[in-house]
Length: 246
Ligand SMILES: C[S@@+](CC[C@H](N)C(=O)[O-])C[C@H]1O[C@@H](n2cnc3c(N)ncnc32)[C@H](O)[C@@H]1O
Image 1 (spheres, rainbow, N blue to C red):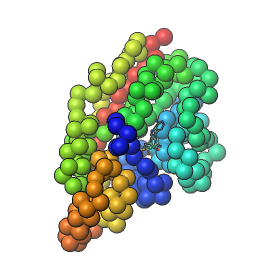
Image 2: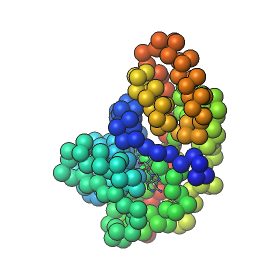
Image 3: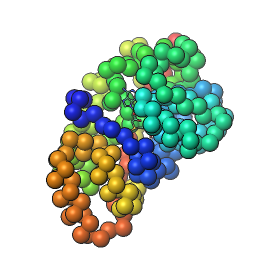
Image 4: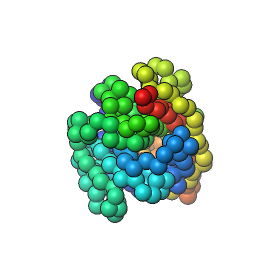
């Protein structure tokens, strides 16, 4: 992704908006569970943001130690103050994986973030820290989902194209990992208009980062006139699942 489209995340606004997907996140992770043939003791939530994905992991794996790592200090700060769970640890790190001992992680989970760093952190890097039979689960949005978000046309098209299929071969190089499955899960989710507008104003939604202010203002004015209470989106992610080849 080119530099000009690099997002700035605002932790509180991010939370207001993306908390609408709490139940969805729990169900998304459920689809990865059958490929784990053991109860994971240590899970890495890579690019955990404010910890929403870490909480969804906790809902699925009650006994695991979860380590959430993110590059953004203010996202990690909110994760630390808002998530009260003695067995979830948050760390802000630019070096990300370098501090994690090799062979110690049973599951690496990356939601909505692999596209930010796939050039720097490949599957080979992730495999190094995996334990025997460990699993990598990478969740990336589908283009159908991106298209379902009400947005100025240019942003919706950009977002949908960015996540257009096929992704597996061109973007996820498997090395000698065994690809277990590619599956998806989707459902309709309502987002309160107020939270949606705030997220758009703060450009927290993919594809809106490079929009001109006038485009955003005009779109918001048109939508406000409709006096809606909520926007309904189809939240859908692919889950790419890999297992360590021993
Ligand atoms: C859309 S958020 C997803 C957060 C979380 N996984 C979730 O599902 O709620 C993307 C996150 O990726 C992080 N990120 C972006 N570029 C990164 C990089 N190069 N290395 C690590 N994290 C990065 C951002 O700071 C942000 O918190």
